[in-house]
Length: 404
Figure (cartoon, rainbow, N blue to C red):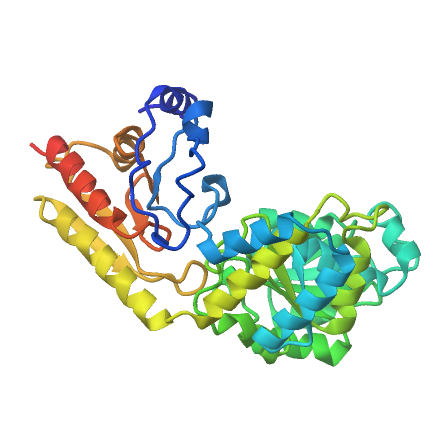
Protein backbone atom coordinates (compact mmCIF):
# COMPACT_ATOMS: atom_id res chain seq x y z
CA UNK A 1 0.00 0.00 0.00
CA UNK A 2 1.18 3.53 -0.75
CA UNK A 3 2.54 5.27 2.33
CA UNK A 4 1.50 8.82 3.23
CA UNK A 5 4.74 10.44 2.12
CA UNK A 6 4.63 8.74 -1.27
CA UNK A 7 0.96 9.64 -1.66
CA UNK A 8 1.61 13.35 -1.05
CA UNK A 9 4.54 13.21 -3.44
CA UNK A 10 2.38 11.72 -6.20
CA UNK A 11 -0.48 14.12 -5.57
CA UNK A 12 1.74 17.11 -6.18
CA UNK A 13 2.69 15.70 -9.56
CA UNK A 14 -0.85 15.01 -10.80
CA UNK A 15 -2.65 17.68 -12.84
CA UNK A 16 -5.41 19.36 -10.90
CA UNK A 17 -8.95 18.33 -11.83
CA UNK A 18 -12.24 19.89 -11.05
CA UNK A 19 -12.01 23.56 -11.90
CA UNK A 20 -15.17 23.18 -13.97
CA UNK A 21 -17.23 21.49 -11.25
CA UNK A 22 -20.35 23.41 -10.26
CA UNK A 23 -20.12 25.47 -7.08
CA UNK A 24 -22.73 24.70 -4.40
CA UNK A 25 -23.60 28.36 -4.55
CA UNK A 26 -23.49 28.74 -8.36
CA UNK A 27 -25.11 31.87 -9.67
CA UNK A 28 -24.73 33.95 -6.52
CA UNK A 29 -21.01 34.66 -6.42
CA UNK A 30 -19.61 34.73 -9.93
CA UNK A 31 -16.28 36.38 -10.61
CA UNK A 32 -16.45 39.43 -12.84
CA UNK A 33 -15.55 38.69 -16.47
CA UNK A 34 -13.40 41.84 -16.40
CA UNK A 35 -10.98 40.31 -13.90
CA UNK A 36 -9.01 37.27 -15.12
CA UNK A 37 -9.40 34.45 -12.65
CA UNK A 38 -6.11 32.94 -11.53
CA UNK A 39 -6.03 29.27 -10.62
CA UNK A 40 -3.84 29.76 -7.57
CA UNK A 41 -3.86 26.16 -6.43
CA UNK A 42 -2.78 24.96 -9.87
CA UNK A 43 0.00 27.56 -9.92
CA UNK A 44 1.20 26.33 -6.54
CA UNK A 45 0.89 22.66 -7.44
CA UNK A 46 -1.70 22.03 -4.72
CA UNK A 47 -4.31 19.51 -5.74
CA UNK A 48 -8.01 20.05 -5.04
CA UNK A 49 -10.45 17.22 -4.33
CA UNK A 50 -14.06 16.25 -3.81
CA UNK A 51 -14.76 16.15 -0.10
CA UNK A 52 -16.57 12.88 0.63
CA UNK A 53 -15.10 12.75 4.14
CA UNK A 54 -16.60 15.58 6.17
CA UNK A 55 -15.56 18.69 8.06
CA UNK A 56 -11.95 17.84 8.88
CA UNK A 57 -9.49 20.61 9.67
CA UNK A 58 -6.80 18.81 7.64
CA UNK A 59 -9.16 18.99 4.64
CA UNK A 60 -9.89 22.69 5.29
CA UNK A 61 -13.31 22.19 6.84
CA UNK A 62 -16.14 23.54 4.71
CA UNK A 63 -16.92 25.81 1.78
CA UNK A 64 -18.41 29.16 2.74
CA UNK A 65 -21.58 30.51 1.11
CA UNK A 66 -21.17 33.58 -1.12
CA UNK A 67 -22.91 35.79 1.44
CA UNK A 68 -20.18 34.95 3.95
CA UNK A 69 -17.45 35.66 1.41
CA UNK A 70 -19.19 38.95 0.59
CA UNK A 71 -19.22 39.89 4.28
CA UNK A 72 -15.52 39.06 4.56
CA UNK A 73 -14.75 41.20 1.52
CA UNK A 74 -16.88 44.03 2.92
CA UNK A 75 -15.02 43.97 6.23
CA UNK A 76 -11.64 43.86 4.52
CA UNK A 77 -12.16 47.29 2.99
CA UNK A 78 -12.87 49.25 6.18
CA UNK A 79 -11.37 49.79 9.62
CA UNK A 80 -13.27 49.27 12.87
CA UNK A 81 -12.34 48.93 16.51
CA UNK A 82 -11.98 45.20 17.18
CA UNK A 83 -13.57 45.30 20.63
CA UNK A 84 -16.49 47.39 19.36
CA UNK A 85 -17.17 44.79 16.69
CA UNK A 86 -16.91 41.89 19.13
CA UNK A 87 -19.30 43.70 21.50
CA UNK A 88 -21.97 44.18 18.84
CA UNK A 89 -21.54 40.80 17.18
CA UNK A 90 -21.55 39.07 20.57
CA UNK A 91 -24.89 40.70 21.42
CA UNK A 92 -26.35 39.77 18.04
CA UNK A 93 -25.21 36.14 18.24
CA UNK A 94 -26.56 35.84 21.78
CA UNK A 95 -29.97 36.97 20.52
CA UNK A 96 -29.87 34.46 17.68
CA UNK A 97 -29.02 31.45 19.84
CA UNK A 98 -30.88 32.45 23.02
CA UNK A 99 -28.02 32.81 25.50
CA UNK A 100 -26.71 35.62 27.71
CA UNK A 101 -23.67 36.49 25.62
CA UNK A 102 -21.30 35.24 22.94
CA UNK A 103 -17.95 35.95 21.33
CA UNK A 104 -16.27 34.84 18.13
CA UNK A 105 -13.05 32.92 18.72
CA UNK A 106 -10.28 31.40 16.62
CA UNK A 107 -12.04 28.03 16.41
CA UNK A 108 -13.51 25.78 19.12
CA UNK A 109 -10.04 25.02 20.53
CA UNK A 110 -9.56 28.73 21.14
CA UNK A 111 -13.02 28.98 22.70
CA UNK A 112 -12.05 26.26 25.21
CA UNK A 113 -8.77 27.97 26.15
CA UNK A 114 -10.28 31.43 26.43
CA UNK A 115 -13.32 30.19 28.30
CA UNK A 116 -11.13 28.36 30.80
CA UNK A 117 -8.97 31.45 31.20
CA UNK A 118 -12.04 33.55 31.91
CA UNK A 119 -13.15 31.13 34.61
CA UNK A 120 -9.71 31.41 36.24
CA UNK A 121 -9.20 35.16 36.08
CA UNK A 122 -12.59 36.75 36.31
CA UNK A 123 -12.25 40.41 35.33
CA UNK A 124 -8.70 40.75 36.69
CA UNK A 125 -6.25 41.63 33.86
CA UNK A 126 -3.27 41.06 36.15
CA UNK A 127 -4.31 37.44 36.56
CA UNK A 128 -4.79 37.12 32.79
CA UNK A 129 -1.17 38.19 32.34
CA UNK A 130 0.05 35.42 34.66
CA UNK A 131 -1.54 32.49 32.81
CA UNK A 132 -0.23 29.80 32.29
CA UNK A 133 2.95 29.97 34.38
CA UNK A 134 1.68 31.51 37.59
CA UNK A 135 -1.80 30.67 38.88
CA UNK A 136 -1.27 32.44 42.22
CA UNK A 137 -4.66 33.55 43.48
CA UNK A 138 -6.44 31.35 40.95
CA UNK A 139 -7.84 27.85 41.08
CA UNK A 140 -5.75 25.19 39.40
CA UNK A 141 -7.87 22.12 38.56
CA UNK A 142 -10.44 21.17 35.95
CA UNK A 143 -12.40 17.95 36.34
CA UNK A 144 -13.58 15.79 33.46
CA UNK A 145 -14.61 12.20 32.83
CA UNK A 146 -11.96 9.70 31.76
CA UNK A 147 -13.92 8.84 28.64
CA UNK A 148 -13.89 12.53 27.70
CA UNK A 149 -10.11 12.87 27.86
CA UNK A 150 -8.85 13.41 24.30
CA UNK A 151 -6.07 15.34 22.58
CA UNK A 152 -8.12 18.55 22.40
CA UNK A 153 -7.96 18.72 26.20
CA UNK A 154 -4.66 20.48 25.51
CA UNK A 155 -6.85 23.55 25.02
CA UNK A 156 -7.66 23.42 28.73
CA UNK A 157 -4.07 22.71 29.76
CA UNK A 158 -2.94 25.78 27.83
CA UNK A 159 -4.05 27.81 30.84
CA UNK A 160 -1.72 25.93 33.21
CA UNK A 161 -4.38 23.97 35.11
CA UNK A 162 -4.18 20.31 36.02
CA UNK A 163 -6.76 17.86 34.67
CA UNK A 164 -8.48 15.60 37.19
CA UNK A 165 -10.05 12.49 35.64
CA UNK A 166 -13.05 10.76 37.16
CA UNK A 167 -15.52 8.08 36.08
CA UNK A 168 -18.64 8.17 38.25
CA UNK A 169 -20.78 10.92 39.72
CA UNK A 170 -19.59 9.88 43.16
CA UNK A 171 -15.94 10.25 42.09
CA UNK A 172 -16.77 13.61 40.57
CA UNK A 173 -18.25 14.92 43.81
CA UNK A 174 -15.30 13.61 45.84
CA UNK A 175 -12.80 15.22 43.44
CA UNK A 176 -14.26 18.70 43.93
CA UNK A 177 -12.21 20.85 46.27
CA UNK A 178 -11.19 24.47 46.82
CA UNK A 179 -8.90 24.29 43.76
CA UNK A 180 -11.63 23.14 41.35
CA UNK A 181 -12.08 25.84 38.74
CA UNK A 182 -14.38 24.16 36.23
CA UNK A 183 -16.08 20.93 35.13
CA UNK A 184 -15.50 20.10 31.44
CA UNK A 185 -17.74 17.93 29.24
CA UNK A 186 -17.00 16.52 25.77
CA UNK A 187 -20.27 16.40 23.87
CA UNK A 188 -19.05 13.94 21.24
CA UNK A 189 -18.46 11.37 24.02
CA UNK A 190 -21.67 12.06 25.91
CA UNK A 191 -22.86 8.47 25.44
CA UNK A 192 -19.63 6.90 26.69
CA UNK A 193 -19.22 8.78 29.97
CA UNK A 194 -20.99 7.56 33.12
CA UNK A 195 -22.20 11.03 34.10
CA UNK A 196 -24.88 12.42 31.78
CA UNK A 197 -25.68 16.02 30.90
CA UNK A 198 -28.24 16.83 33.55
CA UNK A 199 -26.37 15.23 36.43
CA UNK A 200 -23.10 16.85 35.33
CA UNK A 201 -24.67 20.32 35.24
CA UNK A 202 -26.49 19.72 38.52
CA UNK A 203 -23.25 18.80 40.30
CA UNK A 204 -21.62 21.96 39.00
CA UNK A 205 -24.47 24.14 40.23
CA UNK A 206 -24.61 22.29 43.54
CA UNK A 207 -21.00 23.30 44.20
CA UNK A 208 -21.06 26.68 42.45
CA UNK A 209 -18.56 25.55 39.82
CA UNK A 210 -18.89 26.58 36.13
CA UNK A 211 -19.46 23.83 33.56
CA UNK A 212 -18.25 23.89 29.95
CA UNK A 213 -19.45 21.72 27.05
CA UNK A 214 -17.22 21.24 23.98
CA UNK A 215 -19.67 20.87 21.07
CA UNK A 216 -17.14 21.53 18.30
CA UNK A 217 -18.67 19.31 15.59
CA UNK A 218 -22.21 19.11 16.96
CA UNK A 219 -24.16 21.11 14.39
CA UNK A 220 -26.46 19.81 12.96
CA UNK A 221 -29.01 19.63 14.44
CA UNK A 222 -29.54 23.38 14.63
CA UNK A 223 -31.18 23.07 18.06
CA UNK A 224 -27.81 22.25 19.60
CA UNK A 225 -26.88 25.91 19.30
CA UNK A 226 -29.13 26.67 22.28
CA UNK A 227 -29.89 23.22 23.73
CA UNK A 228 -26.89 23.06 26.05
CA UNK A 229 -26.94 26.62 27.37
CA UNK A 230 -30.64 26.18 28.09
CA UNK A 231 -29.75 22.90 29.82
CA UNK A 232 -27.58 24.88 32.21
CA UNK A 233 -24.02 24.67 30.88
CA UNK A 234 -22.27 27.94 31.69
CA UNK A 235 -20.06 27.87 28.59
CA UNK A 236 -20.53 26.06 25.27
CA UNK A 237 -17.98 25.94 22.44
CA UNK A 238 -18.62 25.40 18.71
CA UNK A 239 -16.47 25.28 15.60
CA UNK A 240 -17.45 27.90 13.07
CA UNK A 241 -16.05 26.23 9.95
CA UNK A 242 -17.99 22.97 10.08
CA UNK A 243 -21.77 22.61 9.81
CA UNK A 244 -22.39 26.34 10.20
CA UNK A 245 -20.15 26.93 7.15
CA UNK A 246 -18.39 29.95 8.55
CA UNK A 247 -14.67 30.71 8.29
CA UNK A 248 -12.54 27.67 9.14
CA UNK A 249 -10.49 29.90 11.45
CA UNK A 250 -13.54 30.92 13.53
CA UNK A 251 -15.49 29.47 16.44
CA UNK A 252 -18.12 30.42 19.00
CA UNK A 253 -18.05 30.72 22.77
CA UNK A 254 -21.61 30.93 24.12
CA UNK A 255 -23.05 31.22 27.60
CA UNK A 256 -22.79 33.38 30.71
CA UNK A 257 -22.02 37.03 30.11
CA UNK A 258 -19.68 37.41 33.08
CA UNK A 259 -17.53 34.44 32.06
CA UNK A 260 -17.36 35.44 28.38
CA UNK A 261 -16.46 39.03 29.23
CA UNK A 262 -13.72 37.60 31.44
CA UNK A 263 -12.60 35.28 28.63
CA UNK A 264 -12.09 38.28 26.38
CA UNK A 265 -9.46 39.63 28.78
CA UNK A 266 -7.24 36.84 27.44
CA UNK A 267 -8.19 37.39 23.79
CA UNK A 268 -6.79 39.76 21.16
CA UNK A 269 -6.21 42.67 20.94
CA UNK A 270 -4.82 42.35 24.47
CA UNK A 271 -1.15 41.42 24.30
CA UNK A 272 0.29 39.82 27.44
CA UNK A 273 -2.14 36.90 27.49
CA UNK A 274 -2.34 33.20 26.69
CA UNK A 275 -4.77 33.96 23.86
CA UNK A 276 -2.84 36.67 22.02
CA UNK A 277 -1.91 34.31 19.22
CA UNK A 278 -5.56 33.24 18.80
CA UNK A 279 -6.20 36.22 16.59
CA UNK A 280 -9.60 36.67 15.02
CA UNK A 281 -9.99 39.78 12.89
CA UNK A 282 -12.94 41.78 11.61
CA UNK A 283 -13.31 39.63 8.50
CA UNK A 284 -13.78 36.35 10.39
CA UNK A 285 -15.96 37.96 13.07
CA UNK A 286 -18.39 39.41 10.54
CA UNK A 287 -18.20 36.31 8.35
CA UNK A 288 -19.06 34.13 11.35
CA UNK A 289 -22.10 36.23 12.18
CA UNK A 290 -23.40 36.09 8.61
CA UNK A 291 -22.76 32.33 8.41
CA UNK A 292 -24.76 31.82 11.60
CA UNK A 293 -27.64 33.96 10.32
CA UNK A 294 -27.74 31.95 7.09
CA UNK A 295 -27.55 28.64 8.93
CA UNK A 296 -30.43 29.50 11.23
CA UNK A 297 -32.55 30.68 8.28
CA UNK A 298 -32.07 27.68 5.99
CA UNK A 299 -34.55 24.87 5.32
CA UNK A 300 -32.95 22.13 7.40
CA UNK A 301 -35.51 19.49 6.40
CA UNK A 302 -34.85 20.08 2.71
CA UNK A 303 -31.12 19.94 3.30
CA UNK A 304 -31.44 16.63 5.17
CA UNK A 305 -33.59 15.21 2.36
CA UNK A 306 -30.86 16.14 -0.14
CA UNK A 307 -28.18 14.41 1.95
CA UNK A 308 -30.36 11.31 2.23
CA UNK A 309 -30.84 11.14 -1.53
CA UNK A 310 -27.15 11.73 -2.23
CA UNK A 311 -25.93 9.04 0.15
CA UNK A 312 -28.50 6.58 -1.19
CA UNK A 313 -27.33 7.22 -4.75
CA UNK A 314 -23.75 6.34 -3.81
CA UNK A 315 -24.89 3.30 -1.80
CA UNK A 316 -26.91 2.01 -4.76
CA UNK A 317 -23.96 2.37 -7.11
CA UNK A 318 -21.64 0.50 -4.75
CA UNK A 319 -24.08 -2.29 -3.87
CA UNK A 320 -24.58 -3.08 -7.57
CA UNK A 321 -21.19 -4.81 -7.42
CA UNK A 322 -21.31 -8.42 -6.25
CA UNK A 323 -19.86 -8.88 -2.78
CA UNK A 324 -20.22 -5.25 -1.67
CA UNK A 325 -22.22 -4.38 1.44
CA UNK A 326 -23.45 -0.88 2.28
CA UNK A 327 -24.53 0.54 5.62
CA UNK A 328 -26.20 3.93 5.83
CA UNK A 329 -26.02 5.33 9.35
CA UNK A 330 -26.25 8.60 11.27
CA UNK A 331 -23.77 9.22 14.11
CA UNK A 332 -25.62 9.92 17.35
CA UNK A 333 -23.89 13.18 18.20
CA UNK A 334 -20.87 14.64 16.41
CA UNK A 335 -21.13 14.90 12.61
CA UNK A 336 -24.81 13.97 12.89
CA UNK A 337 -25.49 13.55 9.16
CA UNK A 338 -26.36 10.64 6.81
CA UNK A 339 -23.16 8.65 6.30
CA UNK A 340 -22.16 5.52 4.44
CA UNK A 341 -19.88 2.59 5.25
CA UNK A 342 -18.69 0.35 2.41
CA UNK A 343 -17.44 -3.19 3.06
CA UNK A 344 -16.88 -6.06 0.67
CA UNK A 345 -15.87 -9.68 0.32
CA UNK A 346 -12.19 -9.43 -0.57
CA UNK A 347 -12.32 -12.78 -2.32
CA UNK A 348 -14.62 -11.09 -4.84
CA UNK A 349 -13.35 -7.52 -4.75
CA UNK A 350 -9.60 -7.85 -4.46
CA UNK A 351 -8.59 -4.60 -2.82
CA UNK A 352 -8.35 -3.59 0.83
CA UNK A 353 -10.30 -0.57 2.12
CA UNK A 354 -7.10 1.47 2.67
CA UNK A 355 -5.90 0.62 -0.86
CA UNK A 356 -9.32 1.54 -2.23
CA UNK A 357 -9.22 4.90 -0.46
CA UNK A 358 -5.76 5.52 -1.95
CA UNK A 359 -7.12 4.79 -5.43
CA UNK A 360 -9.91 7.32 -4.94
CA UNK A 361 -7.41 9.92 -3.73
CA UNK A 362 -5.00 9.30 -6.61
CA UNK A 363 -7.68 9.19 -9.31
CA UNK A 364 -9.32 11.85 -11.44
CA UNK A 365 -10.98 13.67 -9.81
CA UNK A 366 -9.33 13.12 -6.46
CA UNK A 367 -11.86 12.03 -3.82
CA UNK A 368 -11.12 12.17 -0.09
CA UNK A 369 -12.85 9.64 2.16
CA UNK A 370 -12.42 8.30 5.68
CA UNK A 371 -12.47 4.78 7.09
CA UNK A 372 -10.42 1.99 8.62
CA UNK A 373 -8.80 -1.32 7.73
CA UNK A 374 -12.31 -2.79 7.47
CA UNK A 375 -14.40 -0.15 5.71
CA UNK A 376 -14.55 3.02 3.61
CA UNK A 377 -16.55 5.91 5.09
CA UNK A 378 -18.37 8.54 3.02
CA UNK A 379 -20.52 11.60 3.68
CA UNK A 380 -22.01 14.03 1.17
CA UNK A 381 -22.80 17.11 3.25
CA UNK A 382 -19.59 18.91 2.28
CA UNK A 383 -19.92 18.12 -1.44
CA UNK A 384 -20.89 20.53 -4.18
CA UNK A 385 -24.25 19.62 -5.74
CA UNK A 386 -23.65 17.08 -8.51
CA UNK A 387 -20.42 15.76 -7.04
CA UNK A 388 -22.31 12.86 -5.48
CA UNK A 389 -22.85 11.48 -9.01
CA UNK A 390 -19.15 11.72 -9.77
CA UNK A 391 -18.34 9.96 -6.49
CA UNK A 392 -20.91 7.23 -7.18
CA UNK A 393 -19.50 6.61 -10.65
CA UNK A 394 -15.88 6.55 -9.45
CA UNK A 395 -16.63 4.17 -6.59
CA UNK A 396 -18.47 1.80 -8.90
CA UNK A 397 -15.64 2.01 -11.44
CA UNK A 398 -12.95 1.21 -8.84
CA UNK A 399 -14.96 -1.64 -7.33
CA UNK A 400 -15.56 -3.14 -10.77
CA UNK A 401 -11.88 -2.93 -11.66
CA UNK A 402 -11.00 -4.81 -8.46
CA UNK A 403 -13.72 -7.42 -8.85
CA UNK A 404 -12.88 -10.86 -10.28
